[in-house]
Image (cartoon, rainbow over all chains, first blue to last red; front, side, top):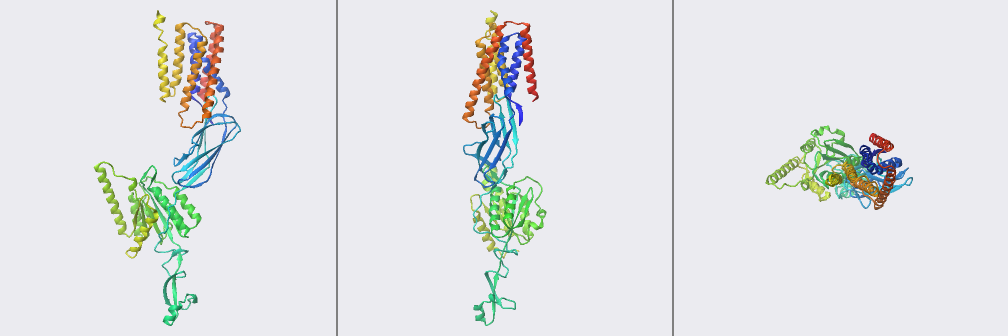
Length: 425
Length: 146
């Protein structure tokens, strides 16, 4: 531990020196008498001071929790010498708020060779990946003349997953993939869903003969079926800008939605990829399975808005990230022109794009002045214009306001896609 | 007559000491308590000088009072840290302060008694004082190195 003298030690030593010096200069023994206890404190303090060696272990109850959950940390401290006063701080991110009776930081007394265990409860207020480190220790000796400080890095970390939105139905691309899945394909082949009837041709299996149609027409007819295939979906997370207040923001909503969508798609054996499009471009190549879920969630937890004047070119996204038949589900507050332009660019390249507009309006109010209100109205008009541009390009845009279930938003997109299916591309 | 006119002189460092304590406790400057204690020492020195030096029980009480003031002042500085302190820790701290004050009283008593053995100045006392001063200064220097 790093040792440092406290102001008290400096004061006692200074007072003792001054008193003795004054006693000598002025020839007054009374001043030496006054200085004597301060000198005695310094000498006693130097004599009893022992540098403590404290061993710390920190364990989190779980390494994965959901947003809003309470995480229990157990910290164990052990020292070779008795520490009269020990301040302990587990320097966690502000998103992990201490709750309960045990505080962080806390002060305690540590008896030599007697391990001390304390419990700290943290409420995980926001999603993200957080290190439960460092642990900062500050010990004082018996007379308070020395302070010993140490910063210990622990390996403990926790991943806080966003609360999952309840979803009933998902959005699917117009073209399905080639692997088996849960989505009824438009193609004809082996499956369960009836598609059409056609005359028998050599090579058709007998089990596909539709006997009712055969009896009516007097020749063999077979039923054609739609196969069940998987889908390829790319979640496009706009991280150029966000609107937020202390307890949340558009990025929080977007990440929460992305988490729910990815989980549901992967549960349906679909192939899912992720593009975090912002100041820092990040992606996860489409894939399926549990491992893919972990990959995407890890990437989502690292999502943050990074200020940048560069970026915005979808050409920077590798081609393998965006399969041609994939549905691109964009989660964007439509605050940054670069992201808005990129989505139109994707649409122009033939991708099936839907935009879930994470509305920034609950986070951005109009100012009190008349000019502020006018500026707010102009901004709203500009947003409406942008939505019209998207709709004109055949990209459904549905506004998602804070408090509205994501399922309702997806329903809105589905309705648009049903009505506008043949209108474009 | 001159002594009567100067009877209020010890009040000057006393008032300055009170002001320095206020500055220190308000958190404006951490060095202020040290200055306040030095001023209180100066106040008592002035008082002794004006009234003729008489080291006795009052000196021991005054010195113990100075130590108590120092302990409480520096404790208040420590309490500024936003750390939850258990009531048992507060009790232990009170006991520690009480022990320090009693210890200071005893030390002052012993030193006062030793000083009373040989009143006035003399070569041996001067040498002893010089050695004590050298030790104290070397301690300060050592601590400054840390």
